[in-house]
Image (cartoon, rainbow, N blue to C red):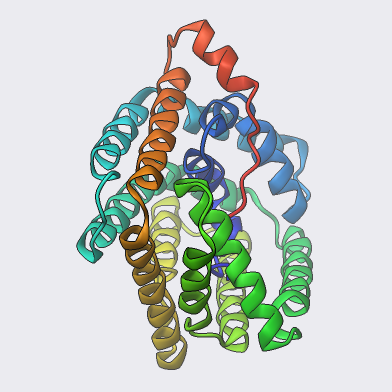
Length: 308
């Protein structure tokens, strides 16, 4: 089940970070086409005026250039460490450390983007946010159709298929017994899409209220940066006790699934995971400034599609 992320705030960083975790070819494509993808995505939520479009385009280009020149080497180091660990069974501590490492890098990128996000938010007019509100409603209707209004059996089936896709990306084809074990694990996950939808809607309304305040009252830039940073931090969990308990239980079950999958993986399957990480490392090196042309050409031919 998808995490209810309010993407409008994170557009400038998520397009890159998600692509970096997308497997072979995604990093090169992210840097070569990231500006186009982000501009298209922003346009789905806000009708930008020419001056605003120019501002967003320049800030997106600056962000990608910063990340490409200063952060990729660190990502290569992280992936290399994971590759060394991939051929053994992972522990819950390993999974927790990886989450912490990714969270740290996500906030590093967010902190770099916050001044740009503040300038963009300050450029908006209150009436421009009407499209954002309508897009949120459309997304929520789609979520309701996909999850809330489906039977428990259908939701469990879809959840298993998504997990199977993720697991087989890393470990290669699973045996019938491994698939049956994975099915049991995913069936046991918490399943309350109404809580998830309520959290999603609450976050959307909070973001709309914040952006409306910025667009209407034009507070000082430093105040906007602080408010956006605080909102991003609040998105890590829910202020509602019931929804927070559900979310934490879902996250915990996800960690446990990865540990269980690693434990039942064969040596050949773990080697497959190590090879996939090797592909990531090659792609990130190919995307670094001054990377050799043969690697870039190879990467550019690969499929960039990725589903969370």
